[in-house]
Every structure is written in C-alpha cells, then in structure tokens.
Length: 205
Image (cartoon, rainbow, N blue to C red; front, side):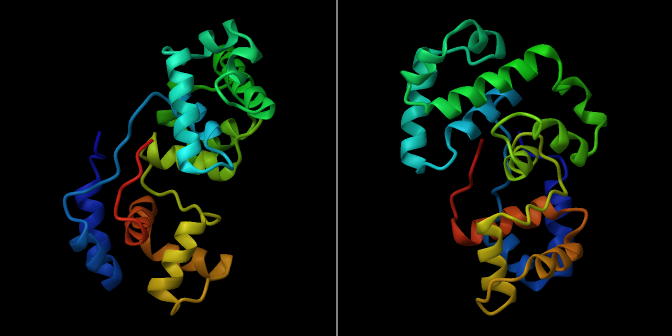
C-alpha cells in the first residue's frame, strides 16, 4: 500500500529543498510501501536485531516454515524450544513471547492507533521487552506509514545527512533535529529519500 500523501509530500519537499528536489527526481516512481500486519512486522524486527540481513532472512524463513500463522495466540500456544529451534536466541524468544502477551492481553491497542499520536504509540510499543525507540520509529514509518517520523538515532539517516548537507561530517543530534524542522510535516518521506541515496533498493517490512 502506497501512502495517499506521497505525491503531495514529495512535491512539497522538492519545492523547498534542492537536495530533496534531486532525490525526488532520481527516485521518481518509487515510494514507501507497507506490508504485513503489526504483530508479524514487530516479530520480524526482533528477529533481525543485531544480526546480518542474510542471517535474519534465514531465521525468518525457518520461523515462517515452522509457524505459518505468526500470531500472538500461536506464539503463546507454542513453547520456547519451538522458537529456539528456528535459530532464535533465548533473549529473542523472550522478547517475542512478551510481545505476544502484550497483543493478546490488549495492552497494545491496534484498533485505537488511528487516533493516537506517534509518541503515544511509541510509548505503548517500548513497554514491550526488546522494542526500543528506534524499532518503534521504524514500525511507525514502514508499517503504519506515519508521515512525520524523524529517527534521530538512525545511522543511515545520519550518514546521508552528513553526505548531502554537512560535507561528509556527521551532524550532532541537535544539528540533525534542526535540519529536520525544514521537512515537517513530511519527515518520514524526507528520511526515506535520504536512505535511498545510500541504498537505491527500498526497504519493505
């Protein structure tokens, strides 16, 4: 699903910022895309923590082979050993089970998210073990398609901003935050274009 705001956001960013104008032109026809349900997306984000993309893909394939229905109820009905057999560490098994409990108990209010702020959703998600602010921000961008998320701690964003705006020097957190103000209310979109400048293949979750 392509965000309904994508064309408008791209045009407005291009009209205000020469760097963005070049990136919008370069990646015309591509956009942010959301895939998967919230629980499955968050499980995949836990699977990929602190391991290579190749290793994460391998574990994920084993997981979906063993558990074709990756749902809170299915995870809770199984055992830790089942998840461990898919290549998950003990810690990641604990994270995924805690995530499943939060979903199953209603502590995560998916049905209310449309009326909740980004900050409120981040607070809800980071109450789960193993989900930090960065993971929650990636979830808001890639799964919920929120238009104005700006992940200050993202290394890729920092590298791209350094290359395009600071002559290769990594910006401070304050400099990055101040730069991001020019892209409101489309900071997710600006971030996506900056990521693409480093890696032309779009990431999809």
